[in-house]
Every structure is written in C-alpha cells, then in structure tokens.
Amino acid sequence: MEHLVHLVIGGALVTAGAIVGTPLRFAVSRFVGERFGETFPWGTLIVNVSGCFLMGLAAAYAKKHGLTGQSEFWLLFATGFLGSYTTVSSFALQTLALARGGEQRSALGNVVLSVGLCLGAVTLGFMGGFMVGVP
Image (tube, rainbow, N blue to C red):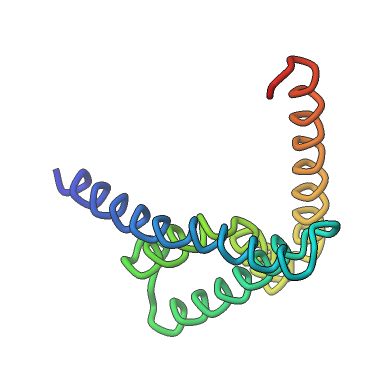
C-alpha cells in the first residue's frame, strides 16, 4: 500500500511539473521563432540549451542536499517540469555523468547513438507518414 501511495504522489508531482513545462516550451519556442525566424530551429535550441542549464542547476542542488531521483523536488522539477520542457536535459546530464565518471567512450557513444538514432527515427517517421498519407 505504501508503494502505491508513493507512486500516486510521485505521479502527481510529475504531472504538476509537466503542466508548467509543456506550455512554457511552446511559448518560449514560439517567441524565439517569431523573432528570429523558422529557417533554423532557434526556438528549440534555446529551449533545449536552457533546459540543460536548469537540469545542471537541479542536479547540483540535489547532490548538495543529498536528494535522490525519487525526491519530491526531483520528481516535480527535473522529471515533471524539465521532462516536459525538454528531454535533452536528461540526455545531457546523463552524458555529463558518464564523462565525469571517467567513461568518455560511453559518453561519446551516448551522444552518437542518441543523435543518430533520434535523427533516424524522426526520418523514418517522417517518411512513413508520407507513405501512409498521414495528414
């Protein structure tokens, strides 16, 4: 029963963070895109870079205060807010952890695989959408 309570509370915290992160991502990306144009994804770049910066701050705060990935702070801010604001922040933090842990090859592999597989997946999805006539 205690596990279920933690699961429900954790889910509520993640949801609360996402309720803020998702529309903020939309607003920031749109604001930047309207001012600098859409020929390069400046809005997405700004969102992702700012999300990474915030994830770094969150990780430093969590480490300083001995918080885990299941702490209320982490669930609300990192998993909920940043998880919906940008997912590249988690990727960047995990890659940094590998590099700082002396796992440079793994860090580089994570970068190559993540970027390559994500670009491949979006390409396949894009091409598949045209093949099946997705509007």
